[in-house]
Amino acid sequence: MAHVTRRNFLGTASLAAAGAAMGPWVRRAGAQAGPVKIGLVLPYSGVYAVLGESITQGMELVFARENWTVGGRKIEMIKEDDEMQPPVGIRKTEKLIDSDKVDILTGPVHSGILMGMRDKVHNSKTILIVSNAGADAISRERCSKWIFRTSFSNWQPNQPMGEWVAKHVSKDVFIAAPNYQAGKDQLGAFKETFVPAGGKLVGEDYPKLGETDYAPYLTKIRQSGAKAVYAFFSGSDAVNFVKQYDQFGLKQSIKLTGAGFLTEPDVLPAQGKSALGVITGHFYTPLLDNPTNQRFVKEFQAKFGGKMPDGFACQGYDTAEVIVRALKAVNGNTQDKPKLVEVIEKSEFDSPRGRFRFDPKTHNVIQPFIYIREVREVAGGINNVPIDRVANVTDPGTGCTLPRPPPLPLWTCAARPGWSRGDDPQRFRGSACRVICLRRR
Ligand code: BEZ
Image 1: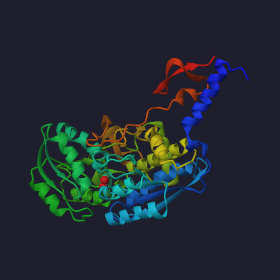
Image 2 (image 1 turned 120 degrees about the horizontal axis):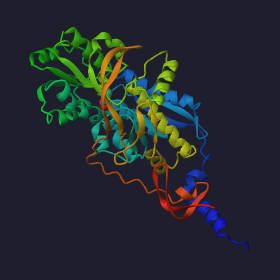
Image 3 (image 1 turned 60 degrees about the horizontal axis):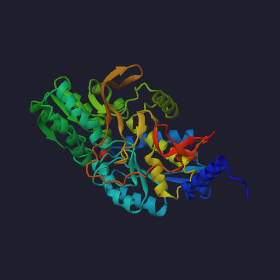
């Protein structure tokens, strides 16, 4: 029998432990043939069509960088237009899960569609990476182990703005948003800090989603005695609201503020000078000076005919980045869904918005910053210039009871060259190592 030294015993034991702990998802790597199918449920028509387009382009930028092949498998995007209709979005979700058998689902934009999709996704154990819809409930009482969100909860861009507007703009504010879940969530979050900061709501209104004539609402605003307006509108609603607000002559006398979606670069070219001076809160502006964002803006503009990326494109970029990193971590094997969830949970990377990571308690992104931005004329055109910021904006996650992430595997140290299990506690790249590690001599 071969003599077993302490060193070769540790080496063999480490490898065995590593193999056992890695489990079948690594050993079967390469066994899965065919492309990784990614289903997109997005609006390619209607009020939010420009949002769907930007999200898709952000994803395409990342997949193109990887030559549309990750972990040895081709990436196939299956795009479905939800037409901004919850029943259509739900039907398309069922088709993608049951007929196309997608590996990962992403989208939607509309909070009502997300709420409609939730049970199908949860019950079928399909991984959904929400790339826009902010319905707060998805990070709270309707959270799911299978659902992640790379965009925002509706609460996140708005809650910091309540106090900011009360302190820096006015305490007499009229609020407005489209009459559906996202509108209610977003204005609710604004009120949460506006009223305690001494703010007074002088009026509130909820036009229908897709309204084209805001004149009756603008008349009410003029008569309300408001010194400022706080609004959430997006897509073509944002174009119409901001332009009509200016045409109505309110811009000079009643300061317009809102959630970032109101003046994103998807709508700024159509709004033109009407948007100048509008103050909004958002997790992103293409003017951020971090290197990942500078590269993102340059590559996005080069690929998409000079188009300025918006927050939606950043959301698409981050969604694809999460997918690419997860697929690499499992060597392209998408069969073991709990393992995929586990690796997605640990996603952490430099995004155009700053350091990206999920809150393990809710699977919702932690916003490195919510920027308070003012629309100004700068080099390259009209854009959102950051003037203030609030750090680490994390949804409260009230009522979400996700299972705690599993502890770090025993082979964390053993699998690292030069280290094996022993009696010397170590830390690697910021993640606490569960086992006692010993550097081999
Ligand atoms: C939503 O429905 O959740 C939503 C739509 C557009 C922009 C932001 C949120």
